[in-house]
Image (cartoon, rainbow, N blue to C red; front, side, top):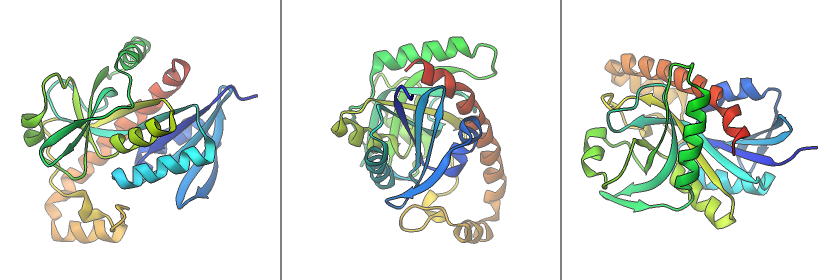
Length: 255
């Protein structure tokens, strides 16, 4: 008998690849236009949904996840970029604070619990001492578009510790709060603060922010200098995904 159901949400296939190996076998289905995976780990029900990139997709996928599984808790996970020194590729950050960045403004978002996030980060860090990555509690900054880290760092409000930038968590939190479902947000660092992204993600996606291979190839043909960066990011993403998979069973045990 399953003790509870944990809902997982991530944006891209690359973010869930290592997790799927950890949780296999999972049944795959479609619901409201999204891919959903169902199964169980250690007596706990698992429902994982792949949202696609961006706040609009993340909000719609969170609603679909809740309708499909009514999870007891939601874990939003994936990759993020470090905005300030102190975080390296492969490090893990749990959101203790959540900001939505738009028009050079930062809106504080509800949905994450700072004290619980700090305790989880400490517990995970203790359990992973023998691994070559660090776990910390930090500030997630959700943006609607790619922005240079230097620019973002210069705008951050006071007290934004271990800031990372991504494109979905604020939307997941807003839907989870309305549904009364607790949220844990966790990200693996796929690019350090010195690594500026040399492209706009919309160059690779359609109007619904879904990555299309032909758009990737067309962009690379126009901008071949992006190839080294894309290869480096792909390697970093594998590291971040592997470390997320290592940390996930411990996280689930300590929710």
